[in-house]
Image 1 (cartoon, rainbow, N blue to C red):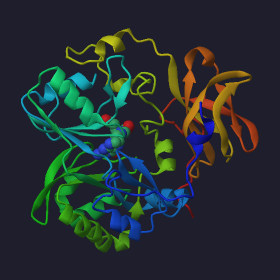
Image 2 (image 1 turned 180 degrees about the vertical axis):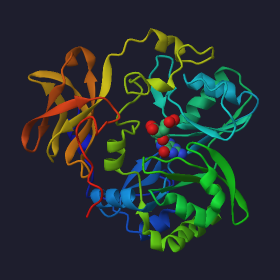
Image 3 (image 1 turned 135 degrees about the vertical axis):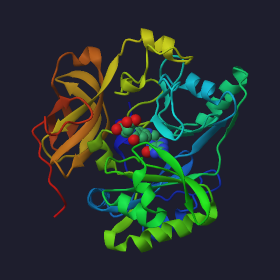
Length: 385
Ligand code: THG
């Protein structure tokens, strides 16, 4: 286990950007807005920080942000066998999926391990998108299509999602796309016109502050759309943003590659609700998942003071129990929060474990995910003031 790397956030050296590492049609505006750090996601730039994690966090919770999430690539699957292929990839029953809906779906290999955790979008009977996390799903889908001799095309079209997130997102969206955007339900999606071009717009996004995602499909409209959000959102205190490490840990949103990977099953990382073990569907992973005995479990950890995690390994006394996969200090609840991937045999019935921090060994309370702050007796601070 490399404990150092997992918690290193920033490096002092610069990234060299070539065609291998894609910029996006919004990158010039992200730069102009003062981006402080990037991460690479699906071979593409994804902003990680603008005004500091905590300042970005409060702004997201209080106002509205525009996020360049073009790194959430779309894998488009079209043709008479589109559903067949998608169902092979996911153990979630999509046989009754309706057009115009989004579905959070684990994609699993034949051992039940998670290949990706995209949002599946049903656009027409024979056209689906997978809005992917950071692994090369297109290659896997193309391989399956060849191997199973399916009548589909699998491509990664030029589509660049832009997210509008925060409590004022709906008002800002209505100013730009019209009042009918308010009718889109959570995880609903429909085409909306922008300067005469239809783009899919969904109520979704990688925060729990509410918001929308626009699947921009015309690069020439990317900057006009970005600018219009900033012009029309001035009085709403609109700002640039990005998926926020504090907010998403508080909200219990998982990050592929951090909190789960090919060696983690949906049952082990808390995505079991998206697996339909009894469904009569043709899915590559169902046989393994039906027999599966979880070996580990992703749990929440609450440490009652602000600290820096100095080693991601966690223990009960001298016994290694697992590792911290994500963590952040929660300014809203005044506690340090972490996700721990714990070995079930080592964990036993323990309700606490020991974390290594800059303040020495600190005991944390184990809890299920997502965090239930009320049940933990924690009351939120309402804003940064
Ligand atoms: N939006 C889009 N594409 C994406 C993401 C996104 N691709 C990459 C990544 N995020 C995929 N991962 C997630 C994880 C969680 C959610 C969405 C995408 C999510 N979950 C809700 C929850 O956990 O409460 C709702 C799940 C449900 O009820 O179905 O929103 O953010 N375009």
